[in-house]
Image 1 (cartoon, rainbow over the protein chains, first blue to last red):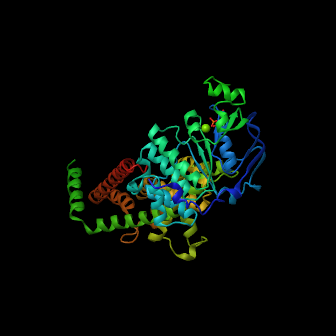
Image 2: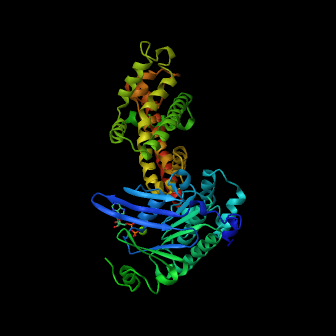
Image 3: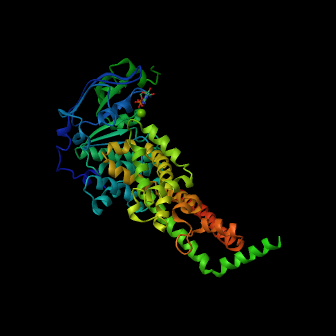
Length: 252
Length: 235
Ligand SMILES: Nc1ncnc2c1ncn2[C@@H]1O[C@H](COP(=O)(O)OP(=O)(O)O)[C@@H](O)[C@H]1O
Ligand SMILES: [Mg+2]
């Protein structure tokens, strides 16, 4: 596989993500009917570290990610990226990889081309680079939806890279994958991070969090209960909810 | 029974020998209905796509109306188009009445709601799946419409074939605006109606056979298309 950092032009852009960061969230609420699914949430995420968002099922991780990406509109509260409101310009510099890859009913190559064309930056070389980075160059002509689960997610990931995002958001991208496929995704994510792209990675998998995280944001019932550097979080979490979660106890 | 058997033999003979009258009628039928389907797709597909992905007040009412229009009786469509195209009508100056063009217009009016309503269903299903990804990528509305139509191409071709099936088999609309004029506006269905009433069962039966074979071929094509799409994971 081609190194994703090389594809993203490592070195040219140490400031790739800095203009969009810090991400600042104040008193964010997302309400459906009477239920506050995200409840007066405050969070600040700085440029640099791989930020891993953890929390039990239903804690609000996916909602939070969609809200910060702007594909879901909050009920109240404020989200700014590098001091700027979440407008089209800001959104176009972020990419989101979903838990279940949404691939177009086209060939592998056409999936990449679609995104490149959206940004008016398409070229054959670029597409081949991205495919090589996912180890899919030899499958370029195949139907994307006939790929294996791991291959589909790798394609979704490099397709997200086609927009050269300043911030890459990932929502449990390996939840449905086996260990080898998971390792491949994690390796690409590390390379992307090395190129200067900010990573915000949602996972409920402890092992994965240990492997990737520089800092951990722990979510519980729609609130951030702690934000701790990784080296401390796994041994000495501050919140009781995180402690219970790490100990494998059920937190409700 | 003797007559009936004779009629079938004669009909088969007409079809297999490629009788000139019969071929002319079949050819005009195909020309009119295929053109009508093409025009309907040009209007109906984008309309279906836009209805599938947009939300506005009164969308529900529009969908109910569209679904109701799917069941328009051909004679009513024929009558309405006749009123528009007749000398006294608003489009009378075009002098299209009793021409193939009038028949194309009538059939297009008949099946555009079908194409729009069915493609709306197909595309809405697809859009449910793509919506978040498209929003994440900031895909513009025209790009989204084009992408959805392209990605739904296999299902949408079956929609077009359904429209063609309806157009080529209807009698009422083409009878009223075409007039069933020999060598000019006589198509399979109007010819069958006329020849049967005149008692010329052979030609009617021959045309009926062609029409049935066409229906079979269309359905087989739809099935083959579905299988192909599934096999290549484009469905
Ligand atoms: N559109 C919605 N309507 C109602 N409830 C929702 C909706 N979306 C999410 N939820 C609820 O919000 C909670 C948080 O969801 P989510 O962010 O998906 O959790 P997770 O942390 O597992 O990703 C869950 O209890 C879920 O059932
Ligand atoms: Mg989730």
